[in-house]
Length: 428
Image (tube, rainbow, N blue to C red):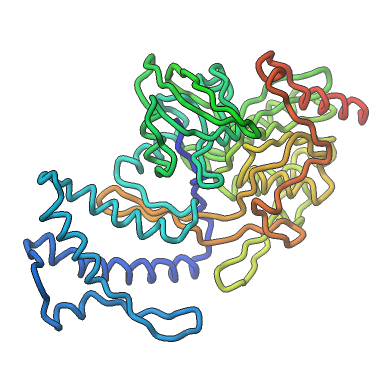
């Protein structure tokens, strides 16, 4: 994205069958209603003037207000607008498919939840490609913040990093075109492109007051999910770029392989770098925490729409229960990476260094449709072990807060890693 994982926009399919059934029943009802709407139009029915009362009544949904009073949503207006566009818009060659997908997107956007999104077939394929870690673009995780599309984190070694893009940068223009107010995947599509092509991005840096035009040369992005960076004396350094692979099983196998490689070096301490990690599979975070926390320890809690909570605990004997650990985080650490860091911190198992995290404490399920499109829908809240909801107002606060200045960033200096090594050397 550009690796389009929207923090998220990350899928979690580890949900109870009861919740899934409730969810599917709801979606089924919505789709039945929507099909009733679309059949009239796509079978050649043209609405003009007035409709009969019998037909008009088909286009009403009974709902409830906040006071539980019954009300009606009259869908006549939807078709009146559609007909007006079809008969009066200056360009006769309307793309009905785009209008159709746009209508669904508008319905989903009405929830005002950036993590709940509808993706067209093309966008869905881009999302799946991004989860494989192979794509062509600038190499950055994208998300929403304060109504803007922002760089959640540029990927290590990516064109975005080399060009100077940083976590928290607000994307204002792409190739001179204003993208404020546009959807995340619209912006992602503009940033993606063939290897070797340039794209100019106008950004407002975090806490900055002036915009900057940055030219990025796109490249093929092959980002490993987990990397054993090597040893710094007696300290092993593991970089976890994301908690996704082609599948949860594939990620767990990759994690286990890296941990085995680390163990062969017999380190006395460990740094786990989660900076710029936008998350991924919820169960991947639980699995990774299981190598450091005792069996039965609460890693995270899940709360559904009814307020019911489920605790997820370690259910295996870990490989690194006693080794001192530092976890590095920043504003690009989101979702599953925050779950892992929060579990390690609140269970007094790791020292957290860096900057405040992103604050994404919701889980999304993905519903795939037969036309190739998909719905990413928020179905759970994630609670930290102490029962508090992880969100932008309740992020992971580092035990030792250290910022990286613009100059340090440009010079390649890393005071956060330096502090992690210093801290661990004092413990071994």
